[in-house]
Length: 306
Image 1 (cartoon, rainbow, N blue to C red):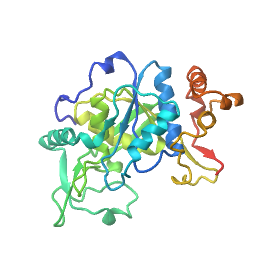
Image 2: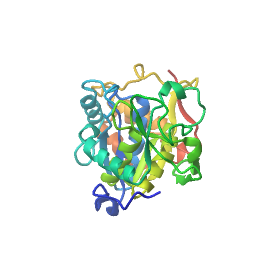
Image 3: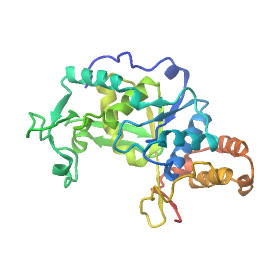
Image 4: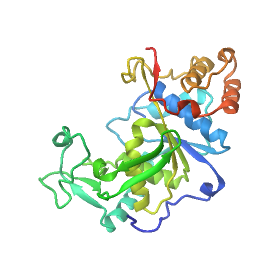
């Protein structure tokens, strides 16, 4: 599927110059320990490759965004010694760009209105069954869905998981614009990665399914496709999902070097215990010089005692 060649949102010459990574949290609360682990993996992978690392705040979902959370996320990262290249990108300021790319997909016949509610689909084990592909089924507000290739599959090599095959029919047609009028994650992230020249994406394994939709969208819009690394999720020792409130990272960065050393341990880096008493710059120097993603290969989850 190819709506047309890439538009003015195509990547700049940065893509040709080397590695460009990014971290893109949602401001729905304080930085979570699991998100910090992912951020560190993304950051160290970029720095190890001599590349650029960007910070993007994915604040489109106004129903989940908490007041002040965006600034707090940035301050927390700064106090833990993260440095990013260029200005912080806010998705809430880029709606016109997303609408323009949505119009390109519409012109190519690749999106359609859908009147199905989330409740009507909640008991399905697989993706959207295409109920509204030939016309909406009920009156009222509609979402816009991307028409995937039922016979297609996305095949790619993940930097940790190895060869991956995601059958598009099983994934179903993703929403690109919600019934409430908000641009959905799947479209915004694809447009921004292209516009920012992102070449490599290191993120949590919970987003693996999204990679199938996003690669299909990249192809439809004529974008280049980044490389992907999906790192294991951090969970409690019993395998349960972490509580965001109980495992939020202190906004003042307290624990500094000790917290960063703990993150490195969770990433399998085996830092020296004495690093916990050193400055953040010393810990980051050690981490950059010793970083390897290999210890995470084949690891289903990163478990912590909590």
